[in-house]
Image (cartoon, helix red, strand yellow):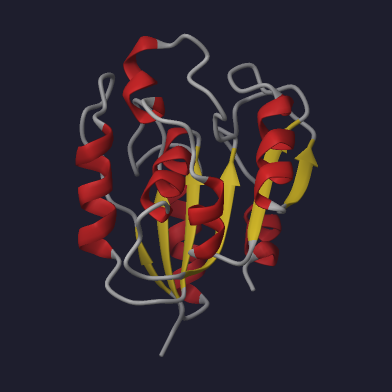
Length: 173
């Protein structure tokens, strides 16, 4: 059975933007099954709506979960009470805190439950840009420390509007 991957875009984005569709196509050509849902709410996303979509998608263990920006936050919130265990999580430019940005504050209504998250996934890769204009590098460092994950600092300052797909593919184990 092929590996299953869930890719979640971030705030006010869609599957049609940035590197999401090319990543899906690349993984599918490699024989993986990829889910790339359109998350609701655009500018005003609701955590519960996003978690519902994740729960409706993941119906077994051993998924690889890739989240860009707010998508990474949603994955961590899902893992706090996940009915299944993920194989790996890749956080790409995920926010560790809301940064006083109102539209996403409902995703941070409670602190992350680190021990519960780690119970539901053994492997975390945290990918950040050296000069991200949206999410400072310290967020990635905090995630790596709290999750015991590997931090990958890539050069750039676009909040990963583009991403080296060979690098991403190389992370997937």
